[in-house]
Length: 348
Image (tube, rainbow, N blue to C red; front, side, top):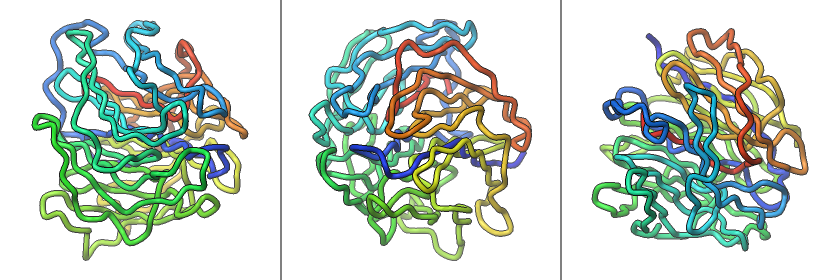
């Protein structure tokens, strides 16, 4: 079965205080841990972390909600983030949820790594990021979390992107600097890990400048990809949600300050002759949403549908067998509005 990247929707850099990257720390197919035998929703369900509910950066969401996709039931406020943040990196590994960096309620970029142990219902702190970052794009490769680019300035300031790449070793609780991901300072970019590569695309080089570029960092040799030219986006896009799965990949995107319902997908090897192809449009315009694949379905949570941004509580999913003909299903609304948040699961 071919591997595909699915793009689900995005919005322009016109947000009042920040980009809407909210990129999930995505684990590539074939590197998932063994499925948990337990049917406990905490082990098999989908956790929503962080984000904001309205245009003000001060509306950070502290509550961590849990969705049981099998029963279509929400468990509100199972726990709360010690330091509520938005536009962070989000992931899960070995029974723990991770929240990396992001803006606090005062709009200050953070270095904190917040870790929630699901079994013991306790929070702890990980080794801090070498530099404060928000609007990061991040990907997960096994027990490693890769944090690329992002911004360090306050949410109220004009953003300037970064070229840095940092590698977090979850078992060792340590950070390592990796090769810079590219020559252009970027943020609000999408990132996905597959095999030994971290693919990254779209985003912004300045507040009003979106890009189409698509690059890859090779993890083990710690070098940029050479000899392969990844297919650029069909149009400049930012603030996307994206997933990677055996079968399809997709991202929602927006241009010209408009929130779109566009869905596109790209098949491996993500280079010519592959090309971005239109899939079934998302039911509503969406940006700053969170997305993940669980089983044979892609789930999309929250986001914004118009500018200026106000979070939504919508939840959708679609089977992924045919990316050209997705059938989006509406699920029970989230307990609260969110965007700039993450959706993660222990059962990938």
